[in-house]
Image (cartoon, rainbow, N blue to C red):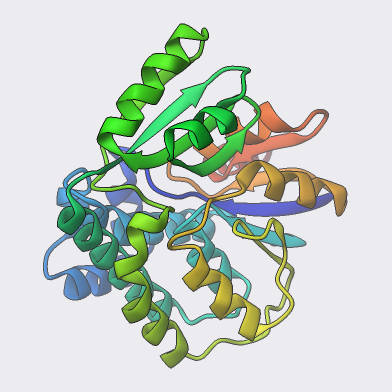
Length: 288
């Protein structure tokens, strides 16, 4: 059975993820603290500038506990950088530096705008049509019936009213700005320069981009997709479907948390969806 390892994005944080990093990858914790200027785990809920490097470290710590390889990798938003490290395209230190910069630039872009936010819309309905009518962006297509929208606060409030009137559920997200939308354009130029400056190698295993929902061809495309991802939607449902079409039937999420594991279960039938922690627990039980 072909398998893929998945790396989560923001909102996957768990209370115990720092403990795992300190235990398994203390070197990453030290480097993240140096790059951010303080321990990012202590302020993970204060902004994406802290959350992104913390989650990157936690996902690589989860990978270290997994003890198995896969035929493909994919990452949700910032998780794409961890996936590239796992595939051998990017050195860990370069990946963490890019993630820390990405978080700072996105936080700054959101704060400087001051008018943007994100809204999750759950349920079956024409959410994309609502987004077009209200002038907002579909930022994340996470799973059937689970979209996240980005745009001005006022437009999102009006859309939320219409969505609830149509029987849909909505939830405002506590983020600094309208991520994965044109609101993030101020973050692009500096991030593009940083991506261009690091060494990027041909992946050793297939990497599926959540921006294109397809396998990336080479280092040039990897650079392009990483920069494009700042202002473009996360096509996670379509990425899972592409992996499934390529023969993947076992999906293992590094963690922290199990957000992506749930999204796999919502999107695909007759597949195995596990977290790295579940794999480790199963291995321990088998060997006992």
